[in-house]
Amino acid sequence: MKRKQLLFFLLFPLIINAQALRNYSNEFLTIGVDAAALGMSRSVVATTNDVNAGYWNPAGLVNIKDYQGSLMYSSYFAGIASYNYAAFAMPIDNRSALGISIIRFGVDDILNTTELIDSQGNIDFNRVSLFSAADYALNISYARNLIFKNVYFGVNAKIVRRTIGDFAKSWGVGLDAGIQYQRGDWKFGLMVRDISTTFNIWTIDTDSFAAVQNAIPGQNQELPEATEITKPKVQLGVARTFNLGRFFHLLTEADLNMRFARTNDLISTDLLSIDPALGFQLDYENFVFLRAGVGNFQNTTEFDGNKNLSLQPNFGVGFIYNGIQIDYALTNIGSIGNALFSNIFSVKIDFSFFRQ
Image 1 (cartoon, rainbow, N blue to C red):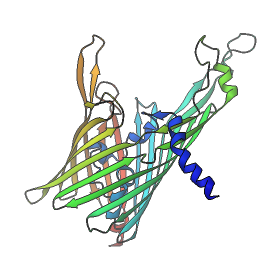
Image 2 (image 1 turned 60 degrees about the vertical axis):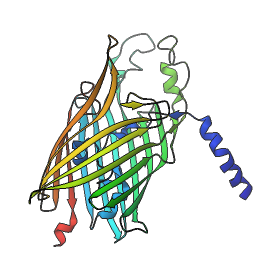
Image 3 (image 1 turned 120 degrees about the vertical axis):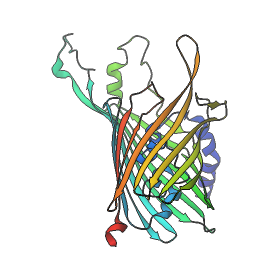
C-alpha cells in the first residue's frame, strides 16, 4: 500500500503536465458576488470581513460574530445569462469560523435544433427541444486566527459541476487559500484561487456528438479533451480607512489581480499578467454607503490596428437597517464597450441584531 501511495505522488506531477492546463477555465467563478464588492471593482481581498468573505478571501470569515446569510441575483448579456448566489457563515469560537456558499451561472431555454430535420429531409419544428448550459459551485470555507493576533488564514474546498444539456457534463474539485493581516490602520490580503489547481473531468455524450459531427465539413471531427486543469490565480490587496470628520469614513483599497499567462491585462508577460483595480467606499456612520471603483484595464486592438487601453468603471450604493443590508451595483462582466452593464442587487442578514 505504501509503495502505491509513493508511486502516485511521484507520478502525479507528470500526470498534471500531461493534461491540458487552461488559462481560462471555470471562469464563472471569477465574475464575483455581493453588490458591495462589485461596486468597488472587486477590490476587497484585504477588507472582506462578512459572510461573503467565503468567496473573496475566506480568512475574513474570522471577523463574523454571529450567524450571517447572503443572497444575490444578477443577469448578464441583456438577461440572457443569470447568476445566483447564496451563502451562510457562522463562528465556531472566538478564533475560527465556518462558511458555505452555492453559485449557479447559466443560460436557460437554449434551442436544440440538432434534430430539426427528420430522416426524410423535412423540417419539423416539433423536433426542436430546449436545454440549459449551467455551471455550479459549492464552496465550504474554514477560517482561523493564527498564532499572531492580527493574522487570519482561510481555505475553501470547492466542488464544481458544469452541464451542457445532455451533451456534456463535468465534475471538478479544487482548493483556494487566503490570508489577511492588519497592522495599525493598514490591512493586507492575499487570495490564491485554485491553489491546488482545479481538476475537471468531462463526460461527453457520444450519440449527441455523432449527430453534429459531420454537420459542417471539416469541423467537429474529434471529441474535445475530457480533462482540464485550471491554473492558479492570485489577488493581492492593501487597504486603509480614513476618518473624514466625525460621521464619515472613506475605505480605500488597491488590488493586483494576477494570472500565470500572457493576457491583454495592463501588465502582461509570458510568465505573469497583472490587472490592477481600485475601490472606494464612503459611509455615513456605517449606515449609508456610496461606492465606486475602476478595474479590468485591458490593452485592446481595434480593427484598424490601433491599440487602446480600456477599463471598467463601477458604481454602487447601500444601506443597513435593522440587521439587514441591501446593496446595489452597476457593473458589467467585461471592459466598457464589450458588454452591457448589469444591475446587481444583494441582501445580507446579520443575526446578531436580532439577539440584542
